[in-house]
Picture 1: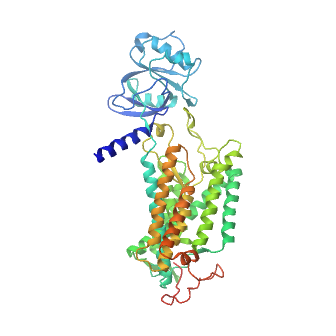
Picture 2: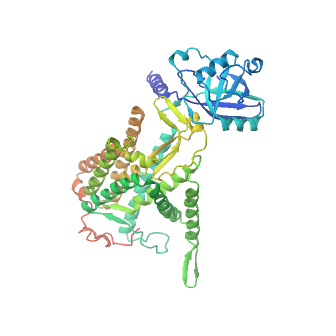
Picture 3: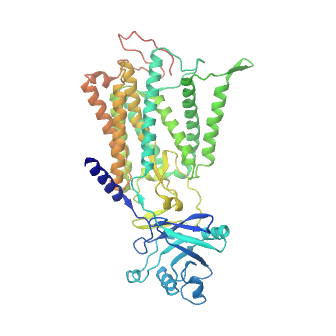
Length: 533
């Protein structure tokens, strides 16, 4: 009985999450091959079948030589019982539809050289149209003619999309895996440093350049710098976006190298060193550098190819986040609280408050993340606008993970739809996760209580973020939920274990200078200070 109730409840939630959009699919075939094209219709006016199997198939007739504002010059026998394609212009959509109905056409497709907009009419005209009506790109029809010739069959259908898309699960998986791996890597480096182990591979690697944030004043300066950069990006986006892209290519290639190098160290892969004129070179490092640079360059060249480049961007993004979490170390929980709280205020201010000050009512955070001149499908209420011709690519900052919405088939035909998650929503809580992992090392916790608890809190915070996003129908500043979840969880665990004082202060050493190695706490003589990981 309980199982049946759960199934019914899940079905209700799933069906309630499905929505009908104005984008639809035109399937054109000739009996042997078929191809799908983007069309835009008005679901409230001329609804279409929701599945391909339920859609009726019509012979498709080319009448693009006319705009079909009247019946003159049209042979009724040619149109009878068929779907017709006519050109846009000279009269409104409802008049074209009434003329097509008078000729006994079964569906009307309007080819357009302008942006595809949701077809509308006067309220009195809606009841007079009884056949499917949709707009399609004229270039798509010309392409179909070249592919299929004059004998074409057409099906029109509009699959509903679900708010609960599989891309959310993929995004959640990417985030939690990155957080967990980054925290584990940071803890491993801390253990190696305390044990006096070199950075790996037995080749005496150089200092990794790990940076410590230990001063509240430096944390405030760091956040103020981020605010300044965001404002500069808002006003000088067209110039600074290319600077950020170049920096990202360099930083992500270096980060990817560090990640791959650490994996090869873990599996025990040899380095294959050789010497030229007394200079030692590692074959492994050379090959890894070539691969990482190639991946970064490929992303840089094809960064606007939405169909597949998101895979490389996510790969480079994961490597960037992992390396950042390993490189930047917060010295104690006090610094974690200050940094995460300030960044929470930063996130909320630039998402929720700045729309009141911008001309277009869009937040500075969203404008910078998506690009002020981002072209593509525009939506307003139940109306959509899809470009009829390929648009010049709009440069976007590489600061988000992107996963295409798998259930939005019709929307992806018109313009790729993505679920996104900012790198900051991984890195900022990730710094706390990394601190927890290092603290587990300091107290010699075999169960990694702090690290595991913080990862679970991050997971629950992400679940809440996506739930609020789905219920509200708008993007959310993830830090609004992640920061309280992770900070409160860590504080509760420390209080329950009676270790709040140590957890708040971190290790009892004091960093006197950022260029110096931190001293071990008094009384801890079981470890020796080694090279940085």
